[in-house]
Amino acid sequence: MNAEAHDARVDAVFHALGDVTRRAILERLSRQPAAVSELAAPFAMSLAAVGQHVQILERSGLVRTEKFGRVRTCQIDPEGLSLARQWIDERKRLWEQRFDRLANFLDEDEPE
Image 1 (cartoon, rainbow, N blue to C red):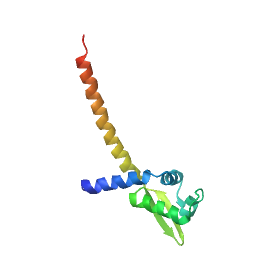
Image 2: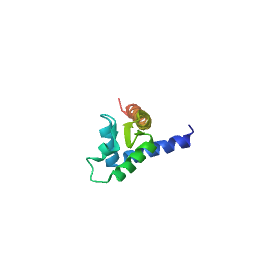
Image 3: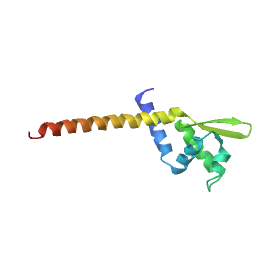
Image 4: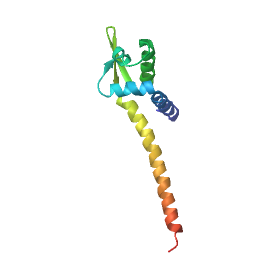
């Protein structure tokens, strides 16, 4: 995957995670797969609105869906979460390196 496509996938994951409803859906799916109608139950919104949230989660790679008859079942796709974790881990490594360099600089500058 080229860098531009990778960046677009990372953007889609964080866009999907940026909404409280979608995070609640992911939290529910972390326990077990569920039908869209089950996911919609705790929300004061239409089934169609929850379906749109599920589509965003699916396009981002955070959720996979399968249709059995009239029921669409959703489950978490670990690859999407892995992509977010990798991005965060890369930023964490960069900042840790910067803090280490700062600590070394401050140690060198300390009078004896």
